[in-house]
Image (cartoon, rainbow, N blue to C red; front, side, top):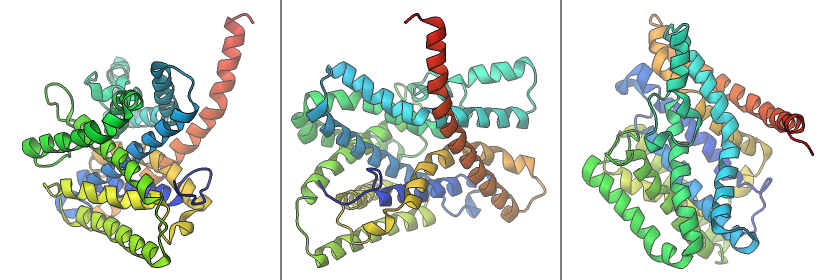
Length: 364
């Protein structure tokens, strides 16, 4: 693998792109306020593919590390991997849930037992299982992405660990084309993740294809990283990478969901592969604390905006499009910051609280 210098083990360019595509998703959801004709990124929901592909790549990285270091049984190792993934995400999910649920309860004027029932009906939002179908109402719809990711990884991780060669050479590539083929034939595009297919959600099929594509990207990067490119070769790869990302942004800006989505997903995979390979000549520009911070903030921003999009037009009926959009973006940015720093505080307080409770209830 590439020896490119990283900040705390993170690829700064990937972290910056996490933030960049999160912003595109936030702008995309303004369509619920402004209408489709006035939305800048009507096709912006395709940005979710970036996150799924990156997640597949990083899962494969974890599998490779586990091959050399793990002494656990396959079941325990898989459980530890999933619990670690959930632990990293959970404080933000929890804080985002309570902020979104409280905002919606106030916006809808709920009181008394109505509030209690509302929270109970929405409780699956704070679990990884909302995309299993075990849900009644979602107050923060964007959590579907996290749930679909966890569910797919729970299946793929142990299978790849157990049958790595067969999975990488046969099953994973097959799952990519079967997943996308099914979606293409039945829906023309992979969007609208909460459509129920009778056995699972559409978003789970989408996630399966994307995560498998991220796994293939990891294999491609492993090969690409071994090649000693000249400076001109690295410049060429950087140009390909730049125009691949640019084509994604232009496509999401000018076009809604179409069958071309399935081509652009592979373009995403190509760009992400070059970024992870460490062969880009501009990679060092992004290896700084600002980009790393933006990458961490991206999750909180993603979790802290969608509920505003559903209600701001109703709450500010006299505001013009420009004004309500500014209020929406400002509220999303500030809520993202609140989620991020409250979650940081939770990570400090909870371990101490659990230690105290354990000492209170259990004898040493």
